[in-house]
Length: 293
Image (cartoon, rainbow, N blue to C red):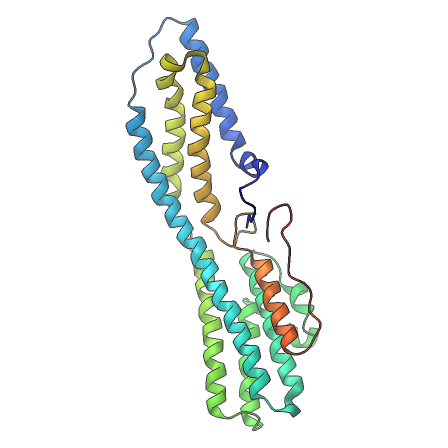
């Protein structure tokens, strides 16, 4: 996530330079043709086209932003649920269950890192093994959904604590409600990741924006003359940038500079939970060149 006051120019250029360069070449071709060949540029209702396209792109970007914001809300719920789980394990379990307390907390830290990796299409093994032994982690890592396997394992440990008499059924129900909140948040994240915007939301805005950029110099050349390449390219930049914003926000877990800062939020959970059991914790992640990952 870009956290600076404004996106760096390099970020913008790296996203739209190819279509922008093609537009500039096309602008030059149209301008030279207008002055070399005896033809009159047709009058085009660019204002009407541009207004309709702006509304279309704005509607699409709002839909993309809603997905991005929902992803951030779900991770906020995950942070709160993780803190609640650590607090319940620390307060409900007796002193003789100190190893179980530690296991539950470390499993939750491993879980959020595993979930982050899954959403970013990365292997979670290395992150999980930072907090769990190989024997404890293998049953979850062997599953199709390792993050869900870690939550299931935590639930089994809570059930075992009831059988041992360490907690009663009321305390078990309270912890289970937290685990349900965690599972619901994960399900929402997986829905966002696995369900893209409908194809119409992706295809037609791209088509109409590129078509508008093609028509733009034809409608402007008679008014702007030799300044057409500059004016048309600047106008095209605005529409291409708005189009790219929608593409950037549509997947909030894509591991790009525009996504929800999963690494930073997982580090927040890691710090809070390790400190809850008295372990040393790393410092918060800091932005790198204006980007918080």
